[in-house]
Image 1: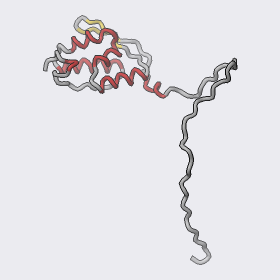
Image 2 (image 1 turned 180 degrees about the vertical axis):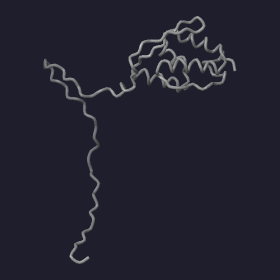
Image 3 (image 1 turned 90 degrees about the vertical axis):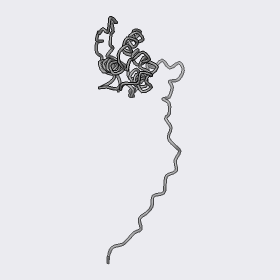
Image 4 (image 1 turned 45 degrees about the vertical axis):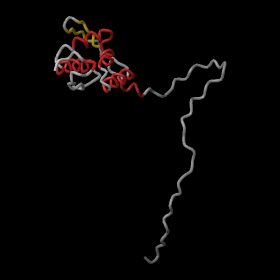
Length: 149
């Protein structure tokens, strides 16, 4: 077009800079009695903390159970790792404590479907899981060896 000037588009050259790395907070000089400064950071894992709820008391075939419903983010991560690895005894122990082995033995006297239903009920009641996260497993599963098909 007459009267307009065309300019070539410039290509931006890639920047060459050193990769950024996280730097630790500077330490206070030795002997400095100044009070600690509270950090503006929060522990992201705390987003997985559950509400602070009272335990629910239950019983199963004469076994008294206290189902915890308050967990740290770290406990929630460990619980899901145990479930994903089908270590239901360890997952159950996070929720009900020392009674877990006895409770799991009692569950495995049921059919596989009913055993899975009991685990799902405890897991869901704890608040660490929603819905059915344990599918019925074959009776050959080592942790449920006594379960009937």
